[in-house]
Length: 592
Image 1 (cartoon, rainbow, N blue to C red):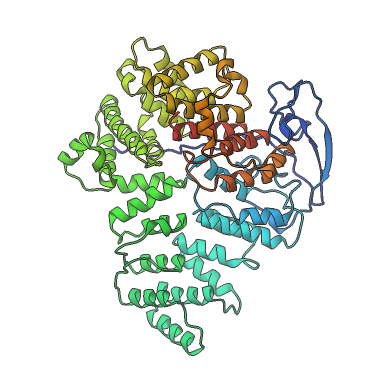
Image 2 (cartoon, one colour):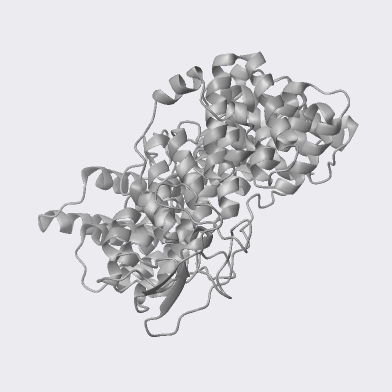
């Protein structure tokens, strides 16, 4: 039986914001309580509501006795750019998301958003930011703001969201190209060609090429060839590679690699049942990777690698990838041997065999033993540089754990299970396994310490926190003093970002010589604009700054000062849950 994949990242429960009227509204905000709005409809995220915390532009917290100040600011009037698909009750970031932001600054930052976020929490946050129903930033023209949002969505592979946002905001007239590209990538040829036909008298190169693609999609290859000749006669021939693709597809020949424009090329290949012999997956966008994997004529290994890369970029490709794994034809012996896979053989075929072995396991203990082999291989691959291996394993294996609960039979796998749950945001289940392992009388100390820091970051401080940190530091120093200094510096940065620097016992708050040496290797400048936006409670600008600072890098390679400011910035604008999850993801990626 193949266990269906379930959603591993849940949308946070967000505070409700009072919707503004059709005219320009006034937003009453409080600089206290992390700079968020105060009052009946504004969230108060201070630890003590009677003593609000104020955060200054350096990222430091003022004494809790200070009173919050009140500020009145005018919001821009609602316009075409204010539309979205996510409201206050469906995962949106609030109607006042762009309070205090200028359109020119916001558009420039949106254009810098990464096409790939290796952090699932940042990927989800970027999507929510771009789809939120909120008053558009002040400035003109509003069409620039909407166009930037559509382009950013399609870059990150959210093709369905691009289509829905374009339809909801009626963006086709002002900015039709992103929605058309998204429809082609989504395989919706009929609607894509209808949108192309609706563009009046356009002679833009993309539209001309899209019309040629539509001829092929509708089964009129001869019209496509005539259109190509006409473009040559008019002195505006399409790119040579695109023309070669059209001719190859009409002749039913396979391509050496997919070529630009990919949205049109991949759609033509799929419709005419033509494949690609090879492709440089590193150069493909997330949306193109997913579209490439949809073509059954392309060899299985390339389709799986495309989806694994898309999933490593944070895209929700779990179900598609699981379906490809489940569709592999393997002999009973290959499936039985999956548990004995060596690290050097840990490739897509091995992962598919492990998936099939787990799906066919007759009982939960047998299934967990198979999954444990997958987790150990993923951890080994991560230590050797494959930074997405653990996250990939977690997102594919967590659905198999639905009927597995903490018990002595699973003690040896408890740390792996807890890490998988922490990686996918399932903190309730993760804590159940952490508490079980912590209470076990006979356990491997390394197992417990591999999940100690994620548990500390995901939970509020308790009386046991200082002793737990002391134990973790002692174990790290016993294993390797040099790496312990680096890990302790990372821990301090994450705790500081969460506003919990006091949770670290006093003897270890000051930096040692080893920690100072580790910190000097990469100490970036503080982003004053991020700290200012966070201190003022300007949620949209703060999140944009964080996303562009991290810039799609692996959390293992992001400088710890940037991680500290990113966690601080999310918490300061009321995204406490996202701040904690980002800290947990960072701890897992950095092997704390």
